[in-house]
Length: 236
Image 1 (tube, rainbow, N blue to C red):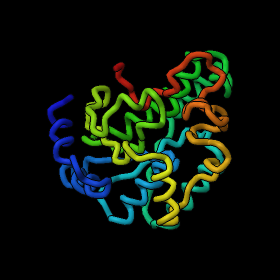
Image 2: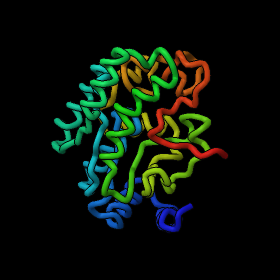
Image 3: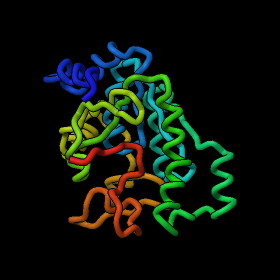
Image 4: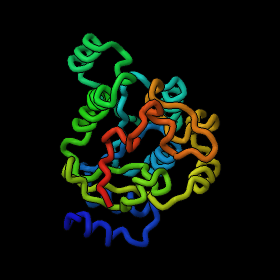
């Protein structure tokens, strides 16, 4: 682990999520950012940041293919807290080239096509969002998937050259739901219809009882780590 990430891990040890976010917002003042996709976990962290007036910029990746329910909770969140959530869109030239050459749903045809679409709609905008920052906050939790159990709550992101911090990494889903209920936080109603992980509408379905958390993402692929590349997972 990078020395800076190791230092942050020690400094944040024993702190609750709000205390940790406050600490990091002081350490990385003006260079800390939180990515939200408006899922359960992200709404919890958004609430912590906004209600405590922490100087952490919140952004989302507007892929152009989100669910109507996602847009609703996005708008409702801004109405309730009265604070901005910054949108990063795909570069229109790259998007137009892909759609003109392969059509709007080429991601169903091959893994390479799906990764190309994720690259244009998510990875490239993420690079722009993270540029100039030194700390990236996420809503990742360990129990979300087997891959994510190999992470730590503080990491060094080699690809993006910054510290990544997952403030509710060790929370259970029940703890997340209880927090949302306690503070009456707006959340995506797709969660109530079997969507534990919510991404682009054409690429996300509800999961059945007993299925993996990520089973609803890119379900048509026979073999996949069920990650789009936003969060690189190191092999254990």
